[in-house]
Structure formats: C-alpha cells, structure tokens
Amino acid sequence: MFLTANAPYGQPGASDRLDVACGDSTRLDTLYMVFEPGRDAEHFNGLSATVYFWPAGRDTLGPHWNFGAGTDFKRLKVEFAPGGIPGMEVAWDGSGVSGAGYRSTKAAGRLSLLAASPAGQGPAVKAGTLYGVARILVPRPLRRSKECGRSMCIEWAETSLAFKVGELVQVTRGQRFVTWNSPDGKACGPMREVGAPEPWKPGSGGTRR
Image 1: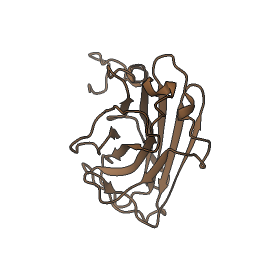
Image 2: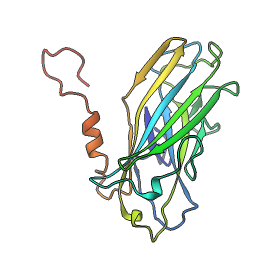
Image 3: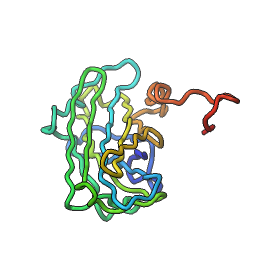
Image 4: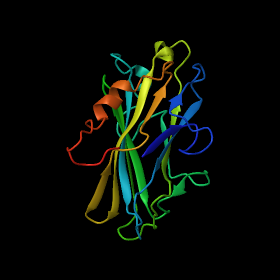
C-alpha cells in the first residue's frame, strides 16, 4: 500500500508530506493510492480500503473535515482507478463497480472505498506492478479558518485484496501516511507507533523487517 501526495509512489514529485496554503477553498490537493499485489493472478476481483483523517496531537477534528455522511459526502472527491497517469496501472475495467463513503467523529474522519469486478472476470495482475486504487482530492480550508494552521495525519489504514471468491488478503504494510501542514513532519508519529510491528528479538520467530 502506497499513499503519497502530488504524484503516485515512485514518480517524480511524490511525497509523504502535503504542505498547502489556505485561502482558496475551491482548490483541491491530490493524494494517490497505489498498491502492489504481491503475486500474479489471472483475475483480480477487487478491494476494499479505509483511509483516516486524524487531527494531530490532542486536537479534535475541525469542521472543515466534516465532509458529510455516507455516500453523499461533499467537497472531498474520490476518482477511482484514473487512467493515463504514469505509475498507476488500472486493476479493473468498465465492467466493475466502485463507491466510497465518509463519516466523522470528534476523533477522526473515515473514508471507506470499495471497488470490484464480476467474479472471475477481473483483469490479470502481476507481482511487482503498481496499480492505482484512486485519487483523493482534498479541499483547502478558508484562510480565516482556525484550521488553516492545524496539522493533520492522513493514514491509509488497511486494504483487503480479493483475488478469487472466498479469498481476501488483508494488507497493512507500506508507505501508508501523509502529513498535512505539519512543519516538523511529525503529525503522524502517534499513528505510526500504534500501527508499528512488535520489535524483533532473536529467537522470537518470524522475519526481521
């Protein structure tokens, strides 16, 4: 899983930091969601994914990040598997379906995404190839808003890949965080710690990463 700002992972300009100037609330900043399947598959049936918008530190989620509820959310935009973008192959075709929903609390905003092809009819995918899930277009706060100077952490928390009926592979690894207006780049520090694997110890089994 690779979440980056400005360009897809591995492409010039891709970054894990998004620093924006407030004021033009009609301008949208772009996040790119890309995944690598880790295996070859004759048909890829689709995926689900969850993205969180966390306020930094002990802040609560401000009104700017309340984009509505359910599938009828406003201002925030999601473009599934956009074509013609370097570094983003398309993992499903026009026969598939896709959708997104949003909800928020004082603690965080949650964006849920789902994309699927008819069982056994999805296109083939190859290990080592990067496939685009979506572009997320994030609006900017007004300049006079108190939220203009507040830092945020945007986390692609998890995704489930469907290679065939009845088989879901859950993934939580990769470049999953983008900071938003975080001068020291540490807005995602607490979230990284929560999601970090246990320290490796000799003789504990498993693989050191």
